[in-house]
Length: 638
Image (cartoon, rainbow, N blue to C red; front, side, top):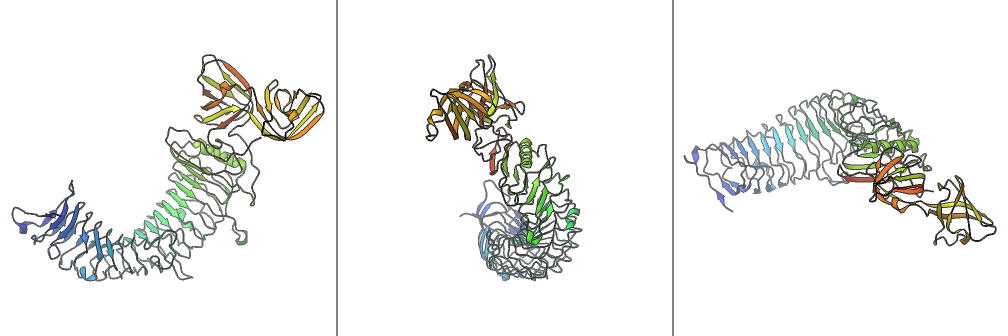
């Protein structure tokens, strides 16, 4: 590996500052700065340097910076750099321990940053570096505890996150200049944050008097507190606090009063063991954007008024007894989640209940979750926001009518691209499933359907007797009508058979096929292809080649034999009303037909506004130009 040699025109003693810059191509190899005894500033950032030598005895250096390189080896002893104020070597390949003797004493040091390396062993004792304002050792392999900090009254920033630390958070009392303290994710393993020996334990220390504090992050550790004490300390008086995140720990007690925290934008305490209620003072926070208290044991109500600044609100997986507040005015809200708050009669917990608020006008909303609650209605009749891509309301008490309104409003929202995901399945009332209600959506065996294609036109106009529920640009398969029916009554007197069953939709003089080869138990004298005479909405007759008295009941397949093949196929449709749509064929021959046809979406289930008993999840990621369908389990329709 080459050595970079610097040869100033006036000799090395004339040089007080070196800045290598960020070169392209990047500098590599080793830099030796031993000749430059009067050097005060050295910068060589964002290159591929593997070693820098000859600087540890330079007592005049105040500023040393070589971050974003590929420097290996151990951090050297710096105590000969007696005037050093700033030392930043983050994002390199340094390894091995950093003994306290390598950085102490440094009587003028203000900034030490060796984050994002592979440093092992304990964090050095920095308690006598009383001029220190900024210490960052994050993203290394430090073990042991955080050292004593109480003597560092000038300290503003302390980062030790992404290490393998245990022990506890030391006292922060008296650190009135402290602005940011970050110790999150030490020895963190997903879903194992409560395992013994995982991460920093013990309580969160008192934060009282830390009036400069802006950020406190201790999430994903193993923090606990003594029973009877509050896991989250008082935040009163911390008027500069912007972010407090302590989630994924084992803290108990209640959420403290948030009054006066006018700078607070991010508060997350989810996945702990907290009790009590969501503080009413949340409503008065003018800057709050993220509030997440999910995964605790909270009771009481969701505040009736939520701050208009909210972007994310999550209170899922608690024991709340509450209606969902009106979300009017929350024009920045992207995510709202109150799911998994169920009724617990033995604890007098009524769960999240009542009506889902009308989401029309929530112009930024992307995710809404109220599944596994006791909600029972949705009043909205107009389109949900075009931004909404995820709506979960499964395992609730929603009525079929409410679900129909939700489906229509969700589809009408017309999210143009990205994920479209709706789940309304597992509908329940007092633990039992309700009878499905079929209204609209995919139409099978649509009676009285008219098909018209004028001369010279390729466009077929389809007029149905009721709403179809389809969307423009949806793919629909059009085939002959097929009924598979149970409870039919066949009665032959002479050679005339009268068939009585629920509304059939066939027309007088239509040719139908009754029975098929798979129905071996069905009376052969009733099978065949016949021209029928309709005697009512639920009866028709036909004539067989044999005669006599014959009665039969049961199940049979009856299909249309005369449906014109010119209308059959799979087409992309254009809707012009709730009961009319058109599609384009390849032929321009005039043709007209009527009767009963089967219309179904080409998806594996239905589109549109239908409700079925077991709605499944639907997920589709499509470009803006591609039409889409809400996917629902499709039962067999009569």
